Amino acid sequence: MPRWAGYNPCLHHAGRGHRPEDGGLPYSPPLLRLLRSGRGGDMPRCGVADILAVAARDATVAVGGPSWRVNLGRRDFPAAATRALAENNLPRSSDSLITL
Image (cartoon, rainbow, N blue to C red):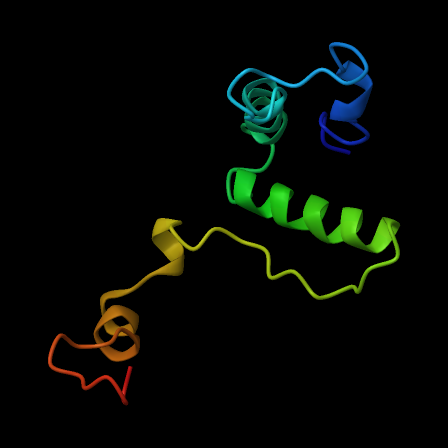
């Protein structure tokens, strides 16, 4: 099981009603560091985006929202892309708006 499993950023709250001055998310830098360290060498093809996508889906379901399938896997992993895929599956600069 990954080291980040079960981490709940809500438990690391600075105090009830605390809001940062700029209105940002107070836990985002520590949470991102935890996610990056947790996936490290154990899961080189698993990106932080995968973890956040699954967490968002699970949080939505936990509050009674819908569920959906999350496609996992890094799209920027060198083995995932080939020249043929790029040449055949990307829009061309000459494509019309309708084609896009």
